Image 1: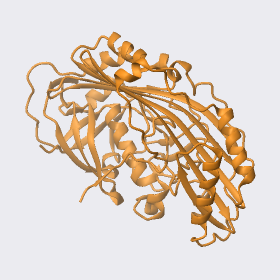
Image 2 (image 1 turned 135 degrees about the vertical axis):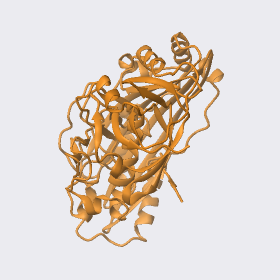
Image 3 (image 1 turned 45 degrees about the horizontal axis):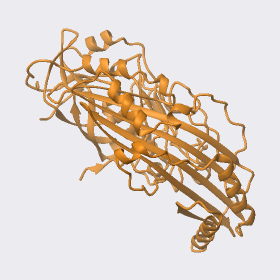
Image 4 (image 1 turned 120 degrees about the vertical axis):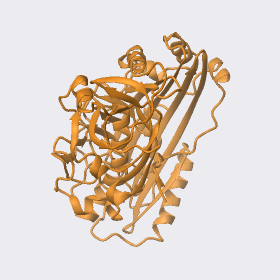
Length: 465
């Protein structure tokens, strides 16, 4: 049975019921707790904790989402809070998750974590909570006050001002404050914003699509994205889907979905530890095209940077795949010690680690080069319902959307959506082209990073109706 890829994270939090757009438009935005106030509460909890060592991770987030269909705009805006408490007591580790914010409630969370630790075995050789006091890489592109103060009324006005009749516009935005404090003097704080934008043009075969994301509102060029989606929209009557195998050109949005699947199913700490990842047998062995270079880098401003993981470890560039050869799974400090591998600063809370600032590095091929490489084949605008069916081979099943013929080096008529079943080990083993331009998509939590990828030409895909 196919295993559906989940976008849930171990840092997931209870979601308050969103108020209606009409109510939100007339009410002030619920303020987030200030960083200084949060820090003061955490310091008090650490000071009076009865555990040998204590760690508190505070995630304070406001999320907004909006969709415009013609002149109608649906909006939600909601605050969320998750506090992760981890303790080390008598060599045993325990953890507890809460949405509380008062010092007394957080002290109770410490006691609950200690109660959990008492039913666990001690961890020999790992006597402390992880701590890395390396100074953070400075970044000035993490926060935008315009996004932080974004109201539903202002977002509605902006969406309605865009020249996008008969199109579907979707945007999500976040304002987050993240703090990681522990008994070993780790004190990490960051305030971030992010916004993602997506447009779909038309409902018939060959619909247009584009997306991008940024930490700065002014960096998001919505009008250019709308024009790009319109240029990918096929006018006229659709054609028949030709039989395969065929060369295929994936848009950046479609490439991003496959990179996300590869990261989650093969490079997460959990998949490596439980043996479902192909990395167990293929570390430092070339299994992908030599041009395939996948890295994770929370310090690169070309993506959606984030300075540290949820253990407070500073982010740094990490090659996950270099010259087609897998190099390492993503690991936090404790998992790395257990597995005997170097840590990679990818803690996400809980017993897993995952890349959150992914880059599939671009190549040098122009749009014309890519269309020529996939001539007499298909263009795929985006992928829906991506599922992993066989983790060891990264077997997957997806529905290809926004599909058009490529004829004589140009986009032709639209054709019906098709089902695509394949293995990422095969798909990325021999690329027909790697584009120079990239697009970005927000990660699942909306604030800690995202994925950047170029268009990719594949030599052989067999579509299924």
